[in-house]
Amino acid sequence: MDRPWVFDAHCDTISRCWRRCEDLASNTGAVDLDRTEQAFGHYAQIFALWTSHGYTGGDSLEQAYETLLRCFRRQLEASRDRICLCRTGDEIRSAWRQGKAAAMLSVEGAELLGCEPRRLEQAARDGVRVITLTWNHANALSGSHCDRPEQGLTALGREFVRRMEELHLFPDVSHLSEAGFWDVMETARRPVLATHSNAKFVWNHTRNLTDEQITAIIKNQGVVGLNFYREFVGLGQDLDSVRAHLDHILELGGEACVALGGDWDGCDTIADLPDIAAADRLYEFLLCHHYRETVVRGLFYNNLMRVVSLP
Ligand SMILES: [Zn+2]
Image (cartoon, rainbow, N blue to C red; front, side):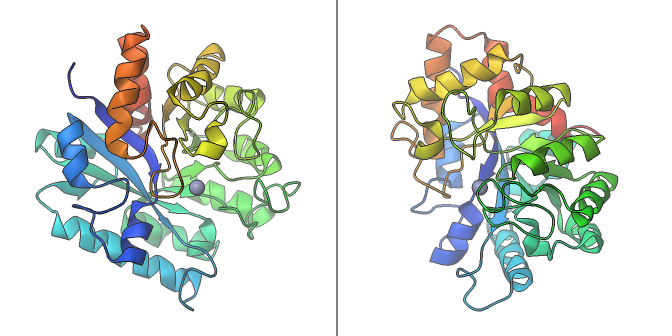
């Protein structure tokens, strides 16, 4: 079997590297270049900059954003012959032609940008392409799935999403309140991502998406990234359980809208997928279970590629 091509929509590797003073090239976590180069034919990753109160060592969240961004840049610079920052599908394909991995940048929790629409232009210049509007805490834009879940987008939240879209940044609705989700879908004119969320029908968790939400993302031609965190996968917490989430999204018509959003280095993933290199097990598992190659390739890279290739 050929080595899979992988484009994963969410990991917390940069934050982990920063906390532990480890490197993207090789580390004790779940994602490093030594392993991805070995396991995959091509590799692209959306790296999240994430932190929260209590993790910043007294710095403000905005200062922490700058610190994490410097860490991300240092890591790319240290491995510049192996990985490069990409903003578009074309840039990813160009990195791949040069035999490099492709790094895209996201921010998890708009509070890292002060929830300020006027800071988005600089974030776009920094290379950010995706912003997860909230993490677990409600912020000035919206409630989250677990903090003020009845709160949808505020007026500032709508302005933030509109400004994001003007700059061709993708709103990420993972972690968002359901009310906020529907407000984003009403406001957005371009595809919306749920970078790391599963199907609530399969496993009832506030971080997972209802059928109505998944259907709305399919209609919007966005992407839902399958999350491998044990608590969100549920059932037997194994490859069969991941498959149940995939099957459900496919049944809803999501063949062109389902992706990987492993959440590695952010949580305890299922034992079958302890690190990103294990994604090849899922690849093999699906092909052995007679999933069409177009479906598997869509899941592994093509669907996310379609969205980030939009002008
Ligand atoms: Zn997350």
